[in-house]
Image (cartoon, rainbow, N blue to C red; front, side, top):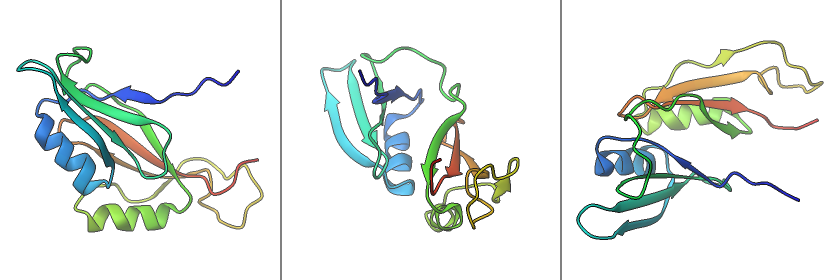
Length: 135
């Protein structure tokens, strides 16, 4: 049996500001923006190529402190290209960092160990890791 992670709730203080950040700055697709009355709004966004989405909103999502989610991680095949794209989109992102030694025999020294980090407007923390091949 497969167990798939498909939705992660991201706590934000301003839904429209967060939606703009994730869709315009990060390039996430807006799957839906559903308003169910005055007190319920759910926005689902999906990173390009991902099987897992994030949900921001109010009312029908758990109450969590905006900015309290840390350690979300995206994976890309080319961290240098991802870093360049984030910078071009206006995201404040760290320089590429190498965390550990490459455990796999690949010609790219950044594979598995190359990372960049950024935060959304509320301070939710994200990492981006390069994995171009899996052992």
